[in-house]
Amino acid sequence: MAGIKILKNKIPFIITMFSCVTVAALAATVHAAKEGKAAQTAADADERQVIVLDAGHGGLDSGCVAVNGAYEKDINLDIVKDLRELLTLNGYKVICTREEDISMHDEGVEGIRNQKISDMENRLEVVKSYPDSVFLSVHQNLYTEPAYFGAQMFYTTNNSSNRRLAQIMQDRFAALQPGNDREIKLIDNGLYLFRTTEQPALLIECGFLSNPSDAEKLSDPEYRKKIAFTIYSGLTEYLSGEARNNESTADGSTESFLYMQ
Ligand SMILES: [Zn+2]
Image (cartoon, rainbow, N blue to C red; front, side):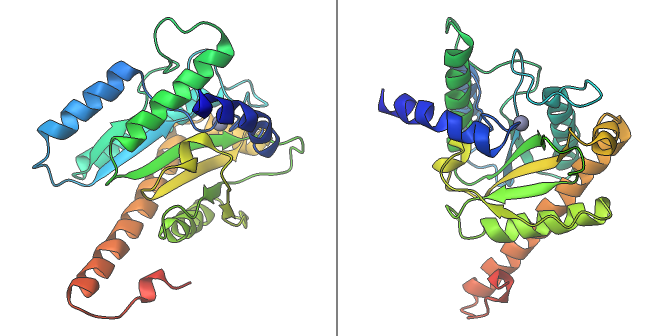
């Protein structure tokens, strides 16, 4: 299958690029995806903004292992659950690619590599089932040098507002993490979940599990709540800007400052 062939070729690149995002682009079982589609059809009249949240890794794939032994997959999921609650309470419709510590591969798929591919395909199917959504994938970073710390946002040019979303989010994290002067980074086609995703989409690396301070903080549920709130704040700032821009467009205004950098 051509798609899988491309994916296989990409895997070494992905590993080189993000040691922990490895296969950053992960998706839900066909079963879950079908449920998602059914839910979307039933809720056509539902005007709530949809947010698709992806907690990276899961199951046998633990993602990065922190210097304190914590697993990235658990940190990702905890942040996503906190974020899901914040968003739901504030009137958003939230779809999660996974809500448990599991891989999202199809039943019966054998071998870790095949399971990983199936997992990513299924996550992507969920993402693509909600084209009007904003898609956020939550991960933690890892590097050989323990000094590197702080969150960093990765985006593609598939959607014209991705850069703005990334910058808003990066600025919010800078407020949470004093000394974090990381810059948003453009990713090319290497990440499976982002390669063909057309809605606003962002890969959020919340911190470095190779940094003792980041690892300790990210292992603290209270800090993870702060991360979730930071993401929530960035997302709502982004969405309110989009809404203002849509209003001015509807008025026939040529004002487009919201998209200028
Ligand atoms: Zn990861």
